[in-house]
Image (tube, rainbow, N blue to C red; front, side, top):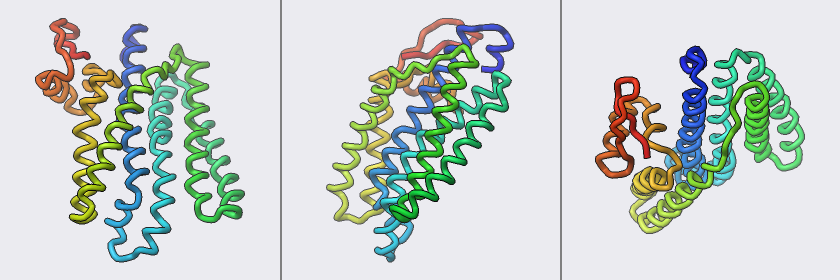
Length: 239
C-alpha cells in the first residue's frame, strides 16, 4: 500500500486495500466462529480433569472469541491509517476503546459477574474498529465495501455446520480425535467454498506468505484461474 501511495497509483491503492480487507475477514471470521462454537471441547483439552473449570471457562471463551474479528480488523485499520500518515488516529481510537473497556467492565462485572469481562473486551475492540473505519472513510480515499461479507459468512456457516456434525459423530472416540477431525473438515470445506463464492480471489491469496505458491496450487485444483498477463514480470492469479 505504501508503494502504491508513493507511486501515485490510485487503482493499485484501492486493489491492495480491498484485497487486504477481504483476506483479513476471510481468515478472522472462521477463526472466531470455530473458537466460539467449539469453546467447550477446546477447554476440555486445556483442563482435562477439571469439569468445573471447563464449565466456567467455556462460556467466557465462546463470547470472547467474537472479539477475534474486531481485533484483526483493528490491526488492519491501524496499519492503513498509519500508512496515510494519520498516526495519531489509531492512538485516539485505542484510548477511547480502553476507556470503554474499563467502564464496561466496571459496570458489567458488578451486574453479570465474570461474563462482564469478555463483554467489555468485545465492546472495546468493536469501538476501536468502528472509530478506525470512520477515520478511514474521512481521511483516506477508501470506502469500505462490505458486500463481500455475505460470501465469507456463508462459507463459515457451511464449514462450521459440517464440523459440528463430524464432531458429534466422532465424539465417542474422544474429544481430541473429534475436535481435530472437525477442524480439519472445516478447513477442507471452508477454503474451496470461500474461493468458489469469491469471498477471496487468487490475487488476495498472493498477499499471504508463500502466497504465489499457494495460489498456483489452488489454480491446479481448479479453485482459481491463472491469467497470463505479464504484470510486474509475473503472471497474475485471480478468480
